[in-house]
Length: 217
Length: 246
Image (cartoon, rainbow over all chains, first blue to last red; front, top):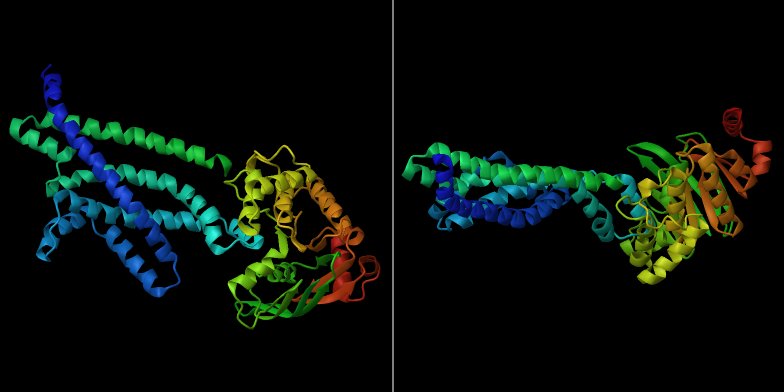
C-alpha cells in the first residue's frame, strides 16, 4: 500500500497548499464582491462616464482568460514599473475576475427585483436610498446568491492557475512534489481529492442556501 | 381635498390622459370606472407621481406640484406622504414578515420608534382581522389577506387620501368581498378614497361620486345612483351595459 504511505508523506505539504488556495479564494471574494457591487451599480448608472467605465472593466475581466490577467499582473506590470509579490498579483488578478463576473450576476439580481415592490416602496413615500437599502439590495442579493456561490466554487478551482506565478498553493505544491519524487499519479490524485473535498460540499451548500432563500418567495 | 387640474400624460407619443380635471372632497369616496385603456390607473398613479404627468397640476392638502415646473425630491416625498396606495397585486415586501412590512415604513418615513410602530401595526392588523398574522411571511397568506396587509401598511402612515388601483381584480369574488368589506368600513369612518374598480356594486352603494372615463378623459361625473340608472353619455351607456350584462 505505497499509495497511503506516500499520501501520508505528501499530505502536510498539500494541506499547506490548500490553505493558500483557500486564502487566495477568500481574499479575491473579499475584495471582488464589493468591487462587483460598485460595478453593478455603475452599469445601471445613467451617468455615461460611470456606465461605460464599468462596462469596459467588466467586459475586459470577463473577456480575458483569468490566466492572461494573472500573467499580466505578475509579468506585465513590473515592465510598467510596478512590481507586486506573487500572492498580491494573484489576488489582484482574481479580484478583477471576481468583480467582473459577479457584477453581472448582481446586476441580473438587482434587475430581477419585481417592479411592483419598488413601486410599493415609492408609493409609501420611501426615499430612493431607503428603497435600495431595504428592498432592492436585499432582494437583489438573494436572487444573485446562488450564482455567486457557484462562482465561488469555480474561483476556488481557478486559484490553481496561480501556480504559474509561483504562489505556493495546492497545485504548485503538488507539482513540486511530483517533479522531485516522480510520483505524479499519486500526488495529482491527492490534489484532485482535496479540491473535490471543498468544491462538492460547497456546491451542496449553495443548493441548500438557494432552497432556504426561496422559502418566502 | 384632492384636486387635479388640466392633467396630461402620454406614453411614447400615445396620449393616455388629455387635460383631466378632477376634484375630490375631503371625506368622500370616489369611484373611477370605464373601459380598459381609458386612463383610470394612469390618473391614479399621477396623483402620487408614480407616473410623472407631462402637464397639469396636482394638489393634495397643502401640497401642490406643477408638472411643468421643476420640483424637489422633498416636495415629491411630501406629496406621497399625503397618499396611501393599494395595488392590484398587493406589492408587499416578500422578504419581510407581515409585521415588518407594516412597521418598517413607519420607522423610515414617519420616524416612529420600533415599539410605537409595532403598536400601531398590531392595532391595524387586528382591525383587518389579521391579528395573528404578524409573524407570517406574505407568501403564506391568501390573496385577500395580503391585500388587507397592504391596506394596513398604507394606513399605518396616516395618509390624507387612499388610492386604490383595482384592489380586488386579482382576487376571487368571495375573497374580494372581504377586501371590499374593509374598504366599506374605512369609507364609513370618513377616509377620503379614490378607487379604480370594476366592482359596480361597490361603486353604486359605497361611493358618493362616480367618475366615468374613456379615451383619456372624464366623460361623466356625478351621483353613482343617477349615472347608473340614467347615463347621459352614450359611451357610459354602452360601458355600463357591457359590465352589467356579465
